[in-house]
Amino acid sequence: MASRRPGAQEWVPAHPTLPALRAAVQECRGCELYRDATQGVMGDGARTARLLLLGEQPGDQEDQQGEPFVGPAGQVLDDALGDAGIAAADVFRTNVVKHFRWSGTRGKRRIHQSPHRGHVDACRPWLQAELALVRPRGVVVLGGTAGQALYGPRFRVGEARGRRLAWPDDLQLDHPPDWTLATTHPSAVLRARGERQAAYDALVADLRVAAGLL
Image 1 (spheres, rainbow, N blue to C red):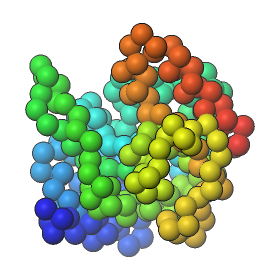
Image 2: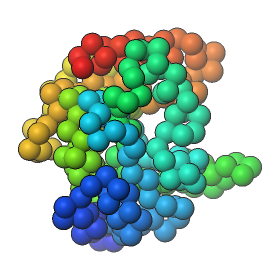
Image 3: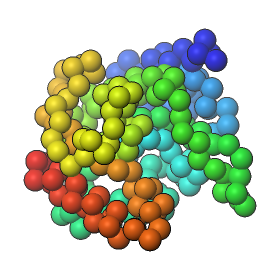
Image 4: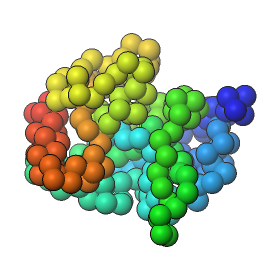
C-alpha cells in the first residue's frame, strides 16, 4: 500500500495561496484516502492568525461540508476557545490529514477510523504549505495523531500537555512557530461521559496557557 502513497507534493501549487490550496487538495492523489472521501478538507481561518490548531483528520460532517471542525467536536472546541479567551479571528484550524478515513456506518453516520502514519506522511506537504502561509506564532496540537505528526511515534499527549514545547527540528520552515502546546482532541471530551466536565475544564486550562503565550 505504501507504494500507492506518492505523497501530496505533486499537487501542492508552486505559489500557493489559501484559496489555491483548497482547490488543489481536491485533485490530490497522494494516498488512497481520496477514494472514499467526499472531498479534501483544508484549513480555515485568517491568513494572519497567530494561533494554528492542529487536529487529526476531518470527521463525517467536515467531510460533507468541506470545512474543518464543524461537527460536535468542533462545537466543543469553539466553546473551549471562548472560555480560554482566544478570539476566533486569531485562530487557523486544520488537520494533519486532509481526507476522512472511515470504516463502516452507524445509522447514517460513517465511523471514524484513525489514519496510519503513512497517511500522515503523505499529507505533510499540505501542512507545510499552510504553515508557511499563515506563519502562526504558536501551534496547539490536538491529540496524539497531531502530536506524533510533529514529534514522532513516541509522543504522548499525557506526558506533554499544557506546557510550552519547542518547534521540532526536522520540520523545517522559513518562519517556524515560536512554540507548540499539546492538549487532548476535543472529541475526547465527548467520549469522557461521566467525567466530561473535568475533561472540558482540562482542555480549557491548556488553551489558557496557549492564550498566555500569544
